[in-house]
Structure formats: C-alpha cells, structure tokens
Image 1 (cartoon, one colour):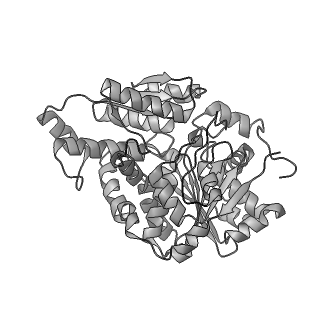
Image 2 (cartoon, rainbow, N blue to C red):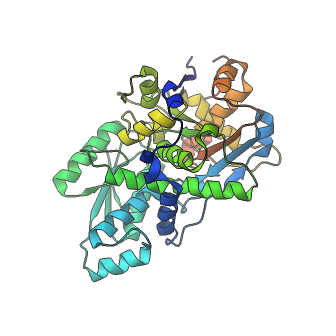
Image 3 (tube, rainbow, N blue to C red):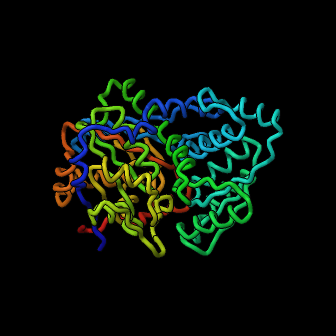
Length: 408
C-alpha cells in the first residue's frame, strides 16, 4: 500500500513579505506576456470553473479550477511558456523590444531582416513539446522533439501533426533532457527547455513568465465571480517551473500572509518533496524509471530557479500515489449536480484528488489542518491538461483503474 506523504515547510515561516526575487514573475510581467500571446488568433482566457457544489461537499468556502484543456486548442497549458519563450528569443535576435511585441511584428521583421530558419528542440512527455512545435511552425521555424521511453502514442501523434520530427528515446525524462541538450549543441539547434542548463536562466525564465498568464487571468476571473483572492493554491509539479511561477506571481499580487501554497508530486518522481524533507535548503534529485501515470510530472531533476522560489514561498509539499490523480480525474469528470464537468488528465487532476481526500478522509484531517484548510478557505486549482492520453483516460474513468485502496 502506498501512502500520501507530506512535509510542512519550516523555511516558509521565515518569509514575511515577497522580495524582489519575485519581481520577474509579477502580475505586470504576466500582463506583458499576455499582451504578446493575445496577438495569436487562437488566444482566449481559459475558463475558471466555480465548483460550488464540490466546495460545499468538501467543507471549504470556495473551489475554483482553471481548465487549461481549452488553451489554444492544444489541450494543455504548456504552449503559454513555449510560445512566449520563442517570441522573446526571436525578438532578441531581431533587435525588438518585448514590450509591445506581436506575432505580426515578429513575422514582418523576420522577413525584412531575412532571418534564417531555426531548428528549435526540447525534451518532453508531450505537452511542452507539442506547444513548442506548434509555436515554431506558427513562426515559420522547425522543431525536433525528444520524448522518453514509454511515451503515449497519442502524444507522439499530436506532435507529429504539427510537422515536427519526434525522436523517442530509450531513456527516462531526465536523461532525455540531457540527450536533447547534447544534440542541440552538436547539431546547432536551439534548446527550449524549462529548466536551467549550463547556467543559462533566460529561456527557462521566459517560459515561466509565460505560465504566469494563468495567474493574471485567474485573478481577473475571480473578481468577475465576486470572489476574494484564493487563500490556498494546490499546484502539481514536474521540474517545478509551473508551480514556482504561479506561487511567485500570486505572492507578489496578494498579501502573502493570506496565501498558502502546496506543491504536489507523484511519489515515484518527487524531488521537491524530498528536498523539503531534507530541510537543508538544497535541491535533491530522483533517479530511476520515474514510473507514474502522471507523465507530465515524471521528472527527477528540479529546475534550480523553481526550487529557490518553492523553498522560500511554498507552505507544504505532498508526495502522492497514482490513485490520487485517478480519483481526481473521476471526481472532475463526474461532477455534482450544478457543477460543470472538467475533462482532466492524469497530471491535471492530481491536486483535485488530493484536496478531496484531505477534506473527506479522517486519516487526512491532520494534514488538512496543518495546511489551514477549512470552512474559510478559497482554493484555486489548475487542471493543467485534458485527456492528452485518451486510452489512459478511459482506463481510469470507464474501467476504474488505479482505484482508491481500502486504507491509506
């Protein structure tokens, strides 16, 4: 039997106010990224779903889920980071300012300056690579995408449909990242990865700034719902770029004393949990197969920039078995009367499953209390992907795969 494990971050208590290190992920920077992304004709804010029925069932004041399956028609949020990073990279090459940058301006200047075609490359479980390949094609460049062993055929096909070349390796995600990096150097390609390599933080920072668009949209949508700002963020974690960007953006926008964030990982790929558990301030890694249904979170090496933010501003870290994500998929896919259905994939539904178990099960009440979850809590979750692996989605929701154990 595999258990849900967690650690409260004692270092979080030492941080009273947001520091200047978060400024690069502020709402102002998020709005700048949004300005560029809005120049794509496919852009529209993804829905913020108010699950008032489930909130009442779980005993919290409010529960909102940002449904990223609606993002750019790509069924996942990752394109925000890759498209913005490509825009910033090309703007820098063309001598353009990021402020006021648009898709049309990039295209015009690329043609005017006769910019040669660039081959962008990355390693991915599927969503980031699809977003990068889509953005590269839209900007008239090429992409070569590396994927780890065991990648779902549907995710491979979705990337190939953009015209990109896909190379499936015999390695896990982290070793595939190393291969993509090595080949980029050897072949003269441009690596676009959401973790730092060779001390270069610029592209990972641009990717993270793209992710903060979710925070800017959510804050505006919460106002439209006449809701207060969230008291709690539960955020799923791979290399950490997404949760760190969200934590930084929200922390810089709201009173930190009223915001508690938790990072949630698969228990087979939980370097942030292990780093927090060690409590020595340094990032730990996880090696091996990283065997989890949550392919988008199957990462063993943290983004150092993301770890620094999480170490100082995240209240708790959770390590969860696969059945937690599966429970979240069924929970969101079969809503209570009056609530809207959300089609959420394995990585997208992890936090929903965890929240429900924390609030429903007596064995988890201590963890909920330690995180301050209760009747006055307004919880924001992000369903980061839809059914990007339709076969797995059906196995979980139709056939009941990865069901809850009797005791945990």
